[in-house]
Image (tube, rainbow, N blue to C red; front, side, top):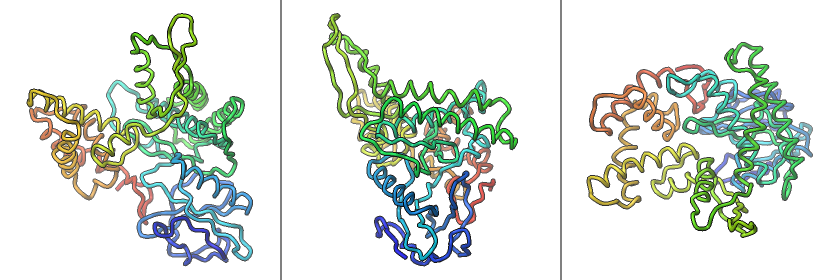
Length: 414
């Protein structure tokens, strides 16, 4: 038996598992049941000190290939699961690829069960369907930008983390994938078309099992992935023109990219139009635009839309403090005050027995939304938020499932 272990200081050695036995026959105290989609190969889960790992047994060529692909994409910071080990030379059974299980990640079958609070005029089921479409299209656009052809995008091959009112999607199985210097239009279209077919099928299976809301039509929802993908791709890579004397159009383009969670680290600008307008085209796109700013400002690690929302809250506080101070305060000073006087106290008001059900940034955002939907007479907004946090914990969060998996996690309500 041989274990190729990535970062042994941060990951278990996995040397206490019965590697000479086929994975399907394992009986071991570290095994645990976690929600999983449909897979071509045997998949089991183990836990070490509160962290969970997925073990997938597959033929040697596929195992080597997927481990290499995942490690490359992990190094590039792409939204895929982290490969931590490859176990081979097992004396008979096929190699096993080990990946780290994503905490606070949900399989698609749970997405329509429970959603954050939204306004009364919005259909929550159709809103979730639209959010699902956006997350898959964004995932494909990010992977394609990096030159990764997935070839097997489906709902079973993805996990979803809450990201404010959005979802962040992560690729799981990548054994059919290919990494290219640059993808052709035909390759991208082929990948998107396969995704549409697979996701329509996944939603239809959910409907047949009585787990999909009646208002959600799988064959209406799935094709929207194509149009949403095209819009995102054009935003990331398309050219646009602007007037050099009034570059507001260029700033609008950059703002749209930032709203999608992307920044432009390099662009190409040319004066190739007779009208005198300039042509702007992003050359190098990077993800995590708002995440980086939030980390620098507060040290909080959040997902992109979460970070955007938290930065907006900091901006709101800055505007209020600026009025009182009769002058604009440094953003870093406001960020520190927001963290210590707002963010931490509001989260501290949530009882510890339910606070861990959601990630801290997501929990704070849902408290913000709860206050907006159920305003109080409290004039001081900080005090109102603390009261909203207590109310949200008692009336909403207590009934929510725990989204961070534990050794006895079942996905059921507490």
